[in-house]
Image 1: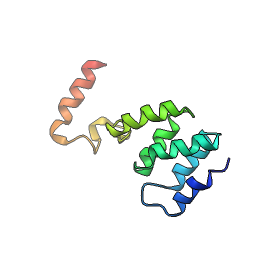
Image 2 (image 1 turned 30 degrees about the vertical axis):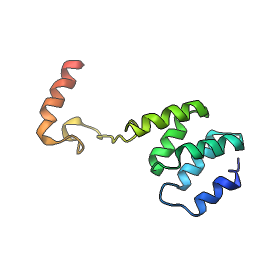
Image 3 (image 1 turned 120 degrees about the vertical axis):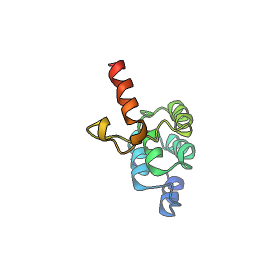
Length: 108
């Protein structure tokens, strides 16, 4: 599916928030060109990785894009994976790591 020219043109003059991955996500998630334009308008202010996640998790539903956009603004899509172990996760400060591990063990 081709992106509408108005959307594709913005990727040619990318301002840092647009990327090929976002264009691909829009083109593969939405089939209607008008919906592609609307989806792009809703995510174009986000960083590329966040915009891509918002689009992909919408499953082609514009209402869900709007809901995801709100979640993204609240930081829900700005998450990092710890890798194989919470005990060595670089995103959990060492000063609180033991407490986080304790809480996880108690919840399991």
